[in-house]
Image (cartoon, rainbow, N blue to C red; front, side, top):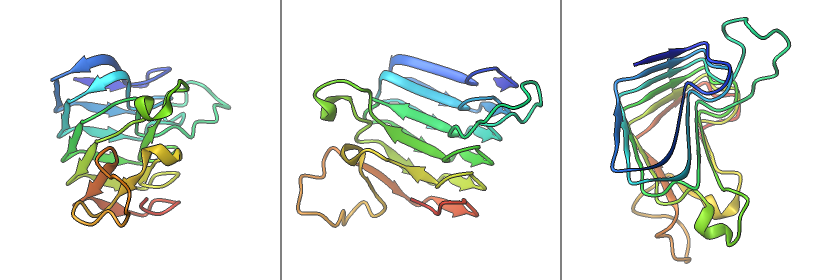
Length: 168
């Protein structure tokens, strides 16, 4: 499937589990190429091209500020992101965040694995988790913490190139 020049997200998926999202081209959308939210759990997101999202790449909405990520995931758990190409996002390549609800640990993006994915030329960092509960570890075998790391996200085997804010 190809989603291009949408006013909002290319694809927005909610309350989904056990799905395989593969082989899509999501490009030039005003917000995120892929928005995953509200109980988006235990899915496989692979072999997608997520290009130039989060800005007014199509020129349809002049003055639009953009700065949205290529992939936005909130409150999603146990997902595998593999072999995707994410390039030229207005904001971060991938943003892992939480829903504003209590308790926050149950609503944060957790236990997600980002593997063998290329993230390049993003306006922000390659992979971002601005909420402390949504931590990211780059090494799957050594999280570098004495805490219980079971709920944290992992990002490894991923290529980061020329992202304005760095890799993580």
